[in-house]
Length: 170
Picture 1 (cartoon, rainbow, N blue to C red):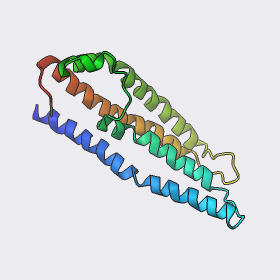
Picture 2: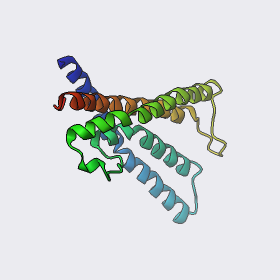
Picture 3: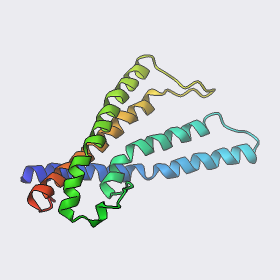
Picture 4: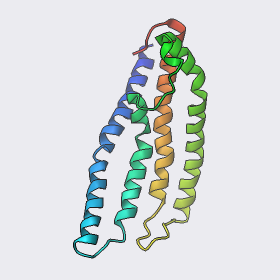
C-alpha cells in the first residue's frame, strides 16, 4: 500500500508542478499582447507574429494545465444530488463516472499523437505570413491528455479505495 501511496503522491506532485511551471506563461502572453498593442497603435508597426504566438502559448497552457486544474478540484460539477451524498457515496458515484474522462483522455492521446507525428513528418507550418511550425503545439495535445489521464487515474484509485473501505487514501 505504501508503494501505491508514493506513486499517487508522485503524480499529484507532477500535476502541481505542471501548474506552477505553466502559470508564468500568462505573463509571457500578456507581454506579447502589450508589445503588439504598442507596436500597432503607438508606432504604427504591427507585428506578423504576436497574435499567433500568443494564441500558441495560451493554447499550450490551456491543454497542459488540465491536470493541475483537476488536482486542485477546479473543474465544474453538477451537484444537485451529489452534494447530499456522504464522502463514501460521492466516491462510489465518481468511480462509475470516470469511464468517460478516462476514455476521452485515451482518445486524445491516441489521436493527438497521430496528429503530432503527421505534422512532424511533413514539417507542417501554419499558413500565415509568420508561418511557425505546428508540430510543437500538436505535441501538447497528447502530453496534456497524458497528464490529465494520470491525475484522473489517481482520483479514480483514491475513490475506489474510499468507496470500498470507507477510508481516504492519502
